[in-house]
Length: 256
Image 1 (cartoon, one colour):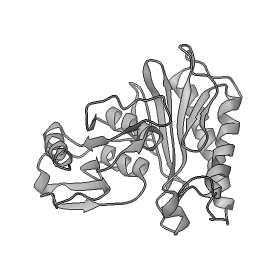
Image 2: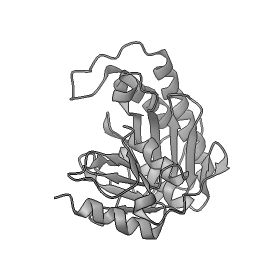
Image 3: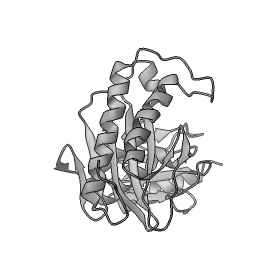
């Protein structure tokens, strides 16, 4: 495997992200053990095996890794790449047979996001990806968000429960943030609101995909969505259009 550096092309980086997701997919397809790891609440044993498979590929490519499961591996300096990864986003869905879970990866350098990939591991087929300045794609087809501007007509994805029912048309709580957010980029959902907060591995790849597709992506408190510390949390909000973003930001702001 060739070594990745900051000078590597975004397509070279994306190829390694795909190889990593494939390695994780092999672990998940073979898995029969949904026992908890005992190391952290809601962490499954397969989370650790999936992480080990991902690390083998990524460290072999010479990049630093920020993973939900293993925290920081390697050194992330000014001239380095780091891959932010959730090997199994939606692990509870997977453990209960809900066919909506993913591997999410986003390569960053000190200037920001370079390439992002989200693979629906439940079917092994649906892949969402983007490169900085290169557009966003679902299985090779360019993605575009919906044109929805009116909250009363919007189908909104959520993580967590609002304290009162907003005046949207409908909502969906699907349970795998990385995949959920990609649905906004693809025009399937009109917006997505985080009513709690998430680790960077849950949303970063999808944030790049949404940005490249033309959707609106912000952080609830206007902080940067790109973070380098395992313990930092953010609250992303995504909408198809600027007009709808105003409405969904107001919904989130009302949750005290």
